Each structure stands twice: as structure tokens, then as C-alpha cells.
Image (tube, rainbow, N blue to C red; front, side, top):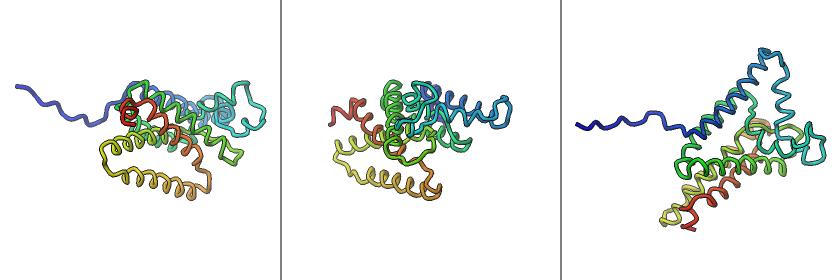
Length: 216
């Protein structure tokens, strides 16, 4: 008698996504221990921001802490977070959106899209932000994953002659969410990072997915 397998209660976690989450977890764990003075480095979080956060001023003539900092910060900022709530929310979102991207394009495609979105998020912040504060967080990459998923849905719907309004409404919803959070956070939301990540994620998704290319 053949038994029907039970449905998976928890979605599968691809190794590549697990490794990204693990890297962010190690970094945030060290920073939290530093915050509580358990590592003998009371300024560990501030030092991490100074060396690995995204500083727009470094694109405009500021003296870097090390020679490659103006370039390295385009990736390093995505492994830092402001606090445990910021970290947990982003990792849950990465787990949710990352799985959908991985199901579509696999490990290589996920890495290309995620890295492109992180770079795009940094570029958006560097070009559009009017601030002296550093930017940290994985949200540029996360909005890129969302942009990629929406891009594929757009192409699939267009190919199947289905209505495109659901995609438009989701994009408008993301726009409204950013406006609301920007207002609630007194202008401290890095919407520029979200925009850059979303645009780069959308473009990268169309370039790496064979189905999107064949339908284009």
C-alpha cells in the first residue's frame, strides 16, 4: 500500500538562501553581543557601520577608512542591520521571497538577482539620498527579489493575455507602503535603496530567466 506523503509544513530552505541568512545572523549576533558588552568591544556596532555601512559621502570626496571602502560598501551594507527587529523582519522576508526566486531560476539565478539588487540599492541610495547618515540593511536585495517576482508575473500574464492590473496594484501598494513608512519613521526610511533594488531586480530577472526571454 502506497502512502501519500504528508504536505510540507515548512517550505524548503535552499542552501544558498540558508548561507545568506547564516552570514547575516553571525554578523548581527556579534553586534548584539557587542551591544551588551560581552565581547569587550562596546563600540562594535558603530565601528561596523563606519567600515561596512553605505556612506554616500564616500562617493563625493570623503576619506575612506580603507582604500576599497567606496566599492566594498556596495555589498557590505546588506549584511548589517539597525537592531534585532530590523534583522528578523528582513530575514523572514528573505526566506519568503528568496524561495520563490530560487524555485524559478535556481541557485545561480538567485545569486545574480540578489547581488544585482543589492548593488542597485546602493546605487539608488548613493545617487538620490540627501543625508550624511549611513545606510544598512538587506532591504535593497529584498525589494529586488520582489521586483524580480513581479517582473516574471508580468511577463507570464502578458504572454497568456491575462490582465496586468494585479501587478500594477501590487507595485502601487509597495509605493504606498514606502510612503507610509517614510512618514512614520520621520524620513529615515531608505526608500532610495528600495527603489534602486526593485529596478535592478526587475531588470536582472528578465535577463536571467529563459522563459522571460523566450516570451519577450
